[in-house]
Amino acid sequence: MDLPLVSVIIPVYNMEQFLEETLQSVLASIYTNFEIVVVDDGSTDKSTEIAEKYTVQYPRVKLFSQKNKGVSAARNYAISMSKGEFILPVDADNLISKDFISNAVDVLHQRPLVKVVVPNAEFFGDKTGEWKLQPFSLKLLARKNMMDTCAMYRKSDWERIGGYCEDIIAREDWDFWISMLKNGGEVLRLDEVGLYYRIRKNSKRINDRELKKHVIEVLNSRHKLFFKQQLGGKLHYNRSWSRFFNFIIRLINHESVIVTASFSDLEEFIYSLPEKFKTEGSLMHSGRNTLKVFCVNNKSFVVKSFKIPNAINRIIYGFLRKSKAKRSFLYAQKLITLGISTPEPVGFYEKIKFFLFRESYYACLQSECNHDFRDLITNSDFPDRIVVLKSIARFTANLHEKRIIHADYSAGNILFGKNKNNEIDVQLVDLNRLKFTKVNMKAGCKNFERLNIDNDALKVLAFEYAKARNFDEEVCVNIVLKNRWRKHKIK
Image 1: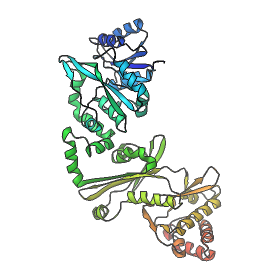
Image 2 (image 1 turned 90 degrees about the vertical axis):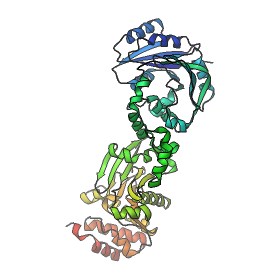
Image 3 (image 1 turned 90 degrees about the horizontal axis):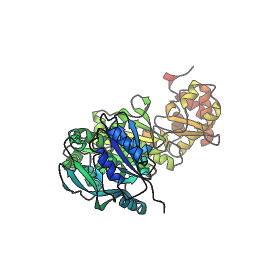
Image 4 (image 1 turned 45 degrees about the vertical axis):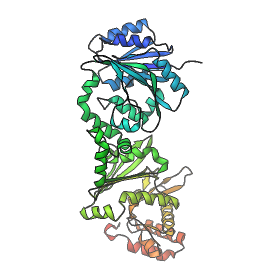
């Protein structure tokens, strides 16, 4: 059987004192099919010269260089240049045992559910003895950086999660393990000592302690849902007290997050919308409410942020009425069930703070309809204009026949476009003002009042609507023309 290739990743920054010993420990491995990928991260000492000497002597050692960008960027670069199925990061001042690679490969090769193989470890240098590592659990991982960087995993998992985060400048391995394991996967710790961890003054691990606030802020930003699942809320500066603090917070602050089963992989995205909406996404509309487009997992989604209501409505939405985001989500599901086309709902987020409604967001798949009714208003020569108008009229009739009326049936809320069969598709958006009630002829015809289009177009709409609902065509035309909004009348 061919042995899978293992890529040992060694980022280097000013490690001339230790690098050679580290390389020697890896080269002493009894496993035969491995490469060593060294990335010099802008060292100013003799680290590069040492690494170059080993590339000449040992063909399996490869050296790359970059300007100083930090250890995460160096690891990502090294892994991107690697060819192995399995990845083993080793810090340039640590050592590994001669059988660690072999033992770890056996596990990953035979047990596909295991994502990470961790060695037992011992300290050496300024401190000696066993590194007493606790058994792995997600709850413990949520509170502390419980695994060293030196652990073997599949390169495919590095690709899946997008590599090491380059925004975090300390405890990047903690963020990496959360990213890899928060959605499942086993961690297996070997019985044998596989890592010898050097304790020394001014090591990165010691210096990183000064960046605790930064680390916690980045982790909370990147893994909000994970911490909610494991700690009941965010990770706090006093990490061990996080669950207690979050219990108290939940007594006065309530967040609701609902995601459809077909988009369950977007739960973290929906839960993080209050933070993401401020800095990410492409602006689509800004007014009383704001719409942005986000690209997630190679798909485009429209997210609507609803204006924070006034004090009275905060109380009403907090206790008596569903939020606009929740209504939009539930109504979209109901429309689809009834055969009425609307962009596929993804989920919603809402927050109640100090018993008052604060904010809400609704997300749906971006529509493939590339026009809305305003295009018909502004362009009297729009291609197939009459065909489109008739399609919208029949769509409206079907909506009303199914006991649904849109209280804001305006031009921007009616989308249309041609499907693969070259037929006109019509979709309804901005759903929080739907009413579910019987729609008679007068109410149905009056529903066209906000469509500020020329009289000839209105007649087409009214005539086709009447035909679809078996109403008197002339009566419907008269009602539609009579009830159009006069202040927007087109001459």
